[in-house]
Length: 401
Image 1 (cartoon, rainbow, N blue to C red):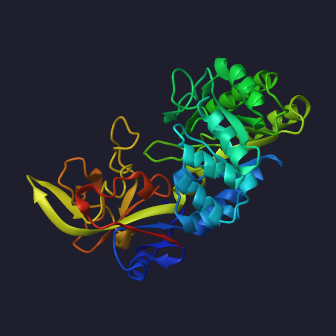
Image 2: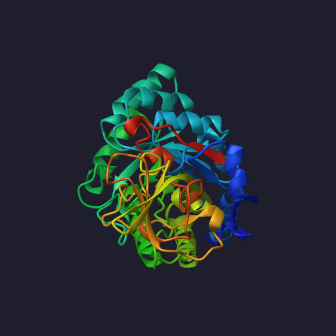
Image 3: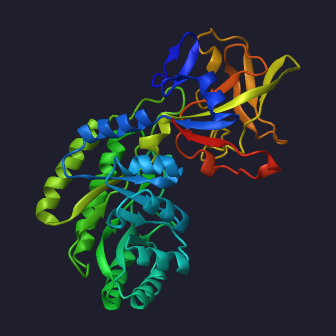
């Protein structure tokens, strides 16, 4: 991929040759995340977005502590999805004022920890409200809450649809007025709405349409709120290209639309901060997964490269995380990146399942035992989204370079 240069026939990551980086890390498989690429992506996005728009990192995309600490210095806030992620966010130095907690099924102990930390809880169910109120009473503070809304629309062309129709996420829009009344009755500190319609979208017009719809819904629901809106989180949905034929998301039209929404909000929702919450878009293209060829074998005329990595470390690349029809992530042989492709081969891991495929029938430089297979677009939903304990193989390492 263009963000990782090839010099003297070898992929370079963070300014280092891949073989040297592998020696420095000391083992394969590993993930490597390039901090300069992450910083550049955030800076590029900041230049496009309107002034005053808050940019938050959804750390579910990649909760590696060192990476989260790096992100904390680049963005305006962090969104977490568990008490474990909350601890990482607090350790990163991010102000509790700028941390939000979303996700269905929050446990009572998680809600109490959130109230004690002083973060914003995105309420997903009326069931959470009395628990938050009771925690606040015990601790002598008012629990800060926003309401996650399940909108009556979807993010079209989205890889994963998080809103519209029956969903486990958020409160159905038609039920919101009653829940807002209960928030007021319980004396919780209401701050705003979180409306997240979907993720992994490469169609700017679909994102623009969803943002416009979300904003209109927020204005409508604000009339029922027990306090003026202080925050409106419009979610994210920005995708990255993974497969052949996919183009990079054009953000200029989205940024212009957000500028228009902010202009309208200044009059219609005075005092409300608008938040854009992104994960994959900020870190996905800055990461690679690297595993080593342990065997090269030919079965009935087809070459298989067997590696020490696989779906237990990178479930998404195996096609078992969100794909309907399996497609290959972009891959290469990192220490032979300058060589022409040889005969088609299939790259597999060491697990005893036919699902453990890293790349199927792909044209790669001819590889030998000891060579390094690189899977690009691996900075998001990699190690933490994979069944690391499956078949009890050794864990992989993550490194921020």
